[in-house]
Length: 149
Image (cartoon, rainbow, N blue to C red; front, side):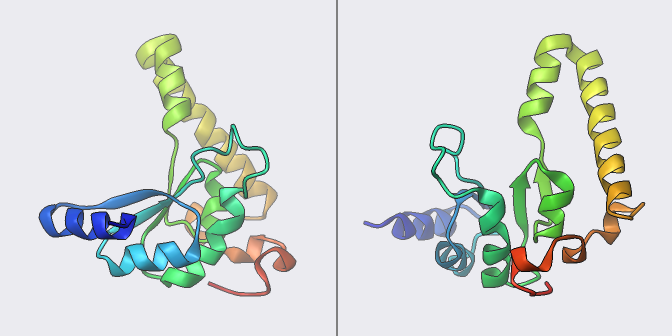
């Protein structure tokens, strides 16, 4: 069987929300959407070990274009840039895990403060003060092929 046969079997048996992580292909993203997944997490899994692997952030706008504007896309970290390139949500698991491991609840509070400060600074640097105003307009057009989302 193929991976998509497995995905179809899981989708048929699992009636809860289904998110597929590790997607790096617009074609696969469309197949996953059509198989009934509820969202996709764009991630290259081996990016830290495979330095020649395509960066997930570069694939994100291609996947957004393939699945359309309404299908939920999730991305790991890089909050403002990921939102500008088509993500609906960003995950921040690893920094939170390390902060809590290092200093418990105090570490969690501190990492949330740091992320809020960094996001606020980034928004200011691109001329925004509300994360809801982030769009592809803040990205150089040549990077995303002069395409609006």
